[in-house]
Image 1 (tube, one colour):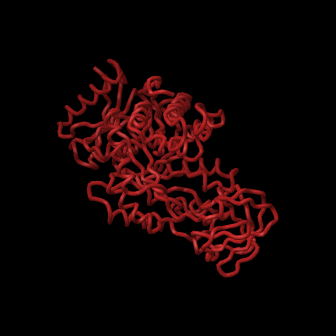
Image 2 (cartoon, helix red, strand yellow):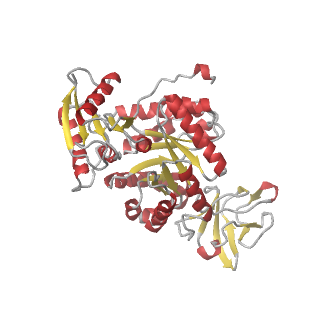
Image 3 (cartoon, one colour):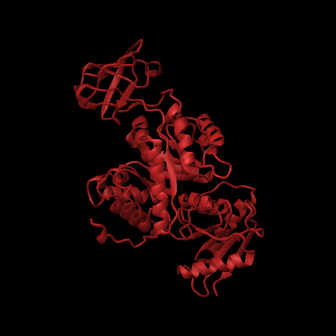
Length: 485
């Protein structure tokens, strides 16, 4: 579709949309148009590209955001340990069911139908006879018959074509590789330098992985800018250790691709709901990812199954839904974002605005949590049109968003970095406000903004959370009910 024919009308939705940047979407025009129509967060995939390319992409995102007049967040998604086969002669080989096949950690040559090398040399220590290995996202299944030194002898379970550098998963989990490689250590520093708002850690197994990431981030990050941490849930062990992982991250991504390979496709839908429910109860944000609009890589419209998948992620209470290859290399990146925004909006309209996902949040004695709870309760009781959070750190707006309501939460802050981080939170519309203003003037400016956007008319009620001391993080202690003049 030519640019002149694009409908750039903003589609209002509470669930945030994440798009992966790539050759199909990194032009200034496409970026700006995707942001205008409803894109909230950009994912930079650190499995590809150099530090220089990531820096240039981050610069393009910020410039496109400025032209569109809307802030977006940036996620730096670290590669993590990739367990892959090595190079294959001719780049691919046909394998037949029942044949023997050797995965050889010591093999340096080009692979064949008999043997292929490994980039993860410790794999022979992680498997035993009877284990099932799934290659290329499960398109090839092999059963381990024996382990002899560096050689893993297997029997092929189905006809398949295996290409160079395809991934390997162990059914049921159990691969010992840590979540952060030497490459990730360097990429983490790059992510901080280019101003990423979030850091996604791949193949997390336990709290120890997140603790290491947090310590590395503390060493690399500036005191005034520390990216939030996202744990990607894609290993069996991560499901077993979910609660301890949640304690040490800001949010989780349900990375359904590798997770499905390890636990089986049929288990993923219920796990998705379990992860989202637990994360929201513990006040963590959630991202649902992988193949959400896969057909739109080559088609201008989604399938009905994809529409249902995105809508169900919204109804489950996801903070954000993510696009990968669809926007990175697909033929219709703009149309994909627009379609996803339309689906999110329609699914949210099917919910009661003041009930939303109606998600239980754990009790707490913190003042800001109590103010957030009170704001939601009051908005429900009075049928308020909006909640306004005057916030320095973004904390109160985040905690309000945990209740899954579908009325707009306008979060006004004087900190640009906080504004960008809040782009991830479901239902939150982050805006800049001069926190040097006195308390009453700030509230008047907030109402003027709501009226300008058509959120409230004269006589409408809205709820405000604020701190009497403006501009001080952690000072939210006031809940007010206002009627638009």
